[in-house]
Every structure is written in C-alpha cells, then in structure tokens.
Length: 449
Image (cartoon, rainbow, N blue to C red; front, side, top):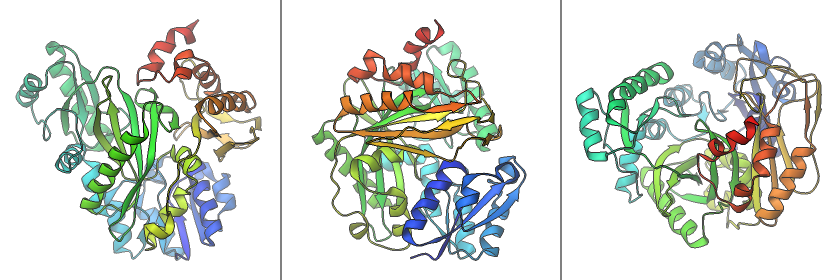
C-alpha cells in the first residue's frame, strides 16, 4: 500500500480523497492555490503546499508545480480527482518519469480514450454499438459536407478531444453546416488546443446513461451498474441517479458485461465511466469514456456499498479486483443533486462569502462538500459547492427523501441551485421517470413564471 498520497485537486473531491486515505492509513498532501488557502482540504491534509496564484493555469493545471510539491513532500502516489489533470496523458507520463504512481489509467489509455473518434473505433471493434457517423476526424469543409450526405440531418459536430459541450454543434439544415463546422473547430482549438472534430447522427430526445467500471492492473475489469444522467443543462449534469428508471436487470448485465470485456481487451485499469445515449426505441449507443472518477460516483457507492475512491487507490497499489471489491449487490435507489453556487433561474455564477451553512441529515442522507459557514466561494473555479446524495429502498422513497433533504439544506450569503432542484424533484415527469437530456428545456417556461 502507498505510504503518502498527494491530491492534485481542490474542493469536495480533494476532501473526499483525504477521507479515503485516512481510513486506509495513508498520509496525505494537499496542494492549493492562493485563493484556497483557507479551504478544508488544506486543513485536514497532513501536509499542504501552495502551488501558485488563483488562476488554474498557474496552480492546479501547472504540472511542474504539482510535481515539485510531490517531490519535496516525498509522496509515492498522486490522486488527480476529477477535472484538472485527471485525464491528462502528459501528466501521467511525467508522474511515471518522476517515479510517482499515478492513480488512474496508464498514459496510453488516457490518450486513447481522450480522443473520442479513436475511442469510438475501439469500442465498435469490441462490439459496442456506436452512433452512426464518421470513422475519424473531418478536416475540411468538403469532408464535413460528404459526412452530412452519409449521416443525414439532424447531425452533431463534436470536438474529438472535447467534453462539457464545448466544440459541439447541432446542425438541422444544410445551410447551417459550414458555419457550425467552423465554430466547433474554433471552440475546440480554444478549449483543448486541438481543432479536430467528427460528425455523428443526432438523436433528438436521448437519455444519458453511463456505466461505472473499475479495473485492476492484472487484466480484470468489472462494472458496478449504471447511472441515469439525463437531467442536464448545456451538457452539464445536474442530477444523477442509480439505477436508471429505464434499465432492466437483463439489459444491465448484458451491456455492463460487454463494456467490461471491451475494456479488458485494451488493458484498462482504475475507475472510469462508459457513457451511452439511449434513444426512444431503447437502443444504446456508446458516445465516450471518462477515464477517471466522476462527480456523481457517490450514487453508485450508495447502491453497491463499494467505496470507489478506496478501490481506486488499492488497485493502483497493485491489489487484485477480486480482493478489493468482491461480489457486488445492487440495493435500493440513490439520487444525487449537484448544489452549485449560481442563480437558479439565470445560472449566473454566485461567488462570495457563505454567511450560513446547515447541512441536512437523517437516515440515508449524505453530503459531500468542502463548504462551511464563512467560507468564501472564489470566482476562479467550477461552481460546484456540494453534492447532496440520498438512498432509499426504492425510487419513490429516494425522491421523497431528497425533497425533504433539499428543504432542510440552508446556504445563505450566495445564490445556489437548491430552488431549481426542488422544482425538478416536484415535477410529475421526473417522478414518473420520463427523462431525457432536454428535460430542463421543458421545465424552463415554468421557471420563468
């Protein structure tokens, strides 16, 4: 087992990793920007190192600074959390060259899965269904016009190295094709430093369903069920749950087993998420893989009783998956609401000081957060400040428990997304499980009243 781990992240995920390390008896090192000097992950780590000014590029994304902090504190592993450097293949290679274990997949796997067109080809070769589209990137206007002839309209142009909706454009008419292609390439270049895009058929009202996977360094990969992530705004998830209301046990086992076998073939290790779109006819199509832990991992933990962060650490240390996880049993239903520091109607970020902070409790309620009363939410980072997770015997109890917990969650001094979550949870379509990625568009007129 590792002796000391540096957490190359901030906020709730950094604190979550520290908790896992404490239970495993592993010492921890926090890194922080000048804006995060008073953060809880700094307080609860065994050691802490300032790695730069508030801007992410000067601190959390600065690989030399992170590696220097790891070397001066003599750690033997780095946990990247999610976001920032978690899927950066160059960072994984630098860790290896510095004789520091990277708690995640090998660099070549990060590179493979980080380029969506390559990941699509790999999954298709393994028998995973993919959305019809181009086999590789489209490099010019003639190529995108040819792709449109094959795919038809509507279609979607996606950044090959992208995520979070950046470098992505839906095209419904031929007149929109070239402007959308140029805009997607420009966005991709600005966001990821790579202008490459590819084309897929556009599914009008899909559900977004993802499988949690975990692999060891001995060639074994397993799935831990699926999560429903259809409640989104601009491709950013707001609410996740497990299991999906649309998934039956037979489909779960068939698709989950197929995913695990495909990842075994490429030598995947660590935690990851394989993401699918489900069309209105019930067909599943692979769209991408996130080769890291996800924000929404707690809902899987709640229904499987598997600590995914501790499992990540243990398999990275060389333990076999069978000893780390064992037999997985799915029990109950879990829902997670992402509590963001933003206006619940305009979605404008709301940085500032939290003047009151009271978390809900009771049976089946969990809050993952690094926020506290008098904490200052800086304007430099993602607006996520807390994750409210509940578990119930079934989906009905889980919804009732979440509605109660949202009512009892007090955050004052800044605006939060709690009112939006309360309206979503009270919606009849949500209660009935009638979900798709455009759910919020249909709710928006109600929010404007």
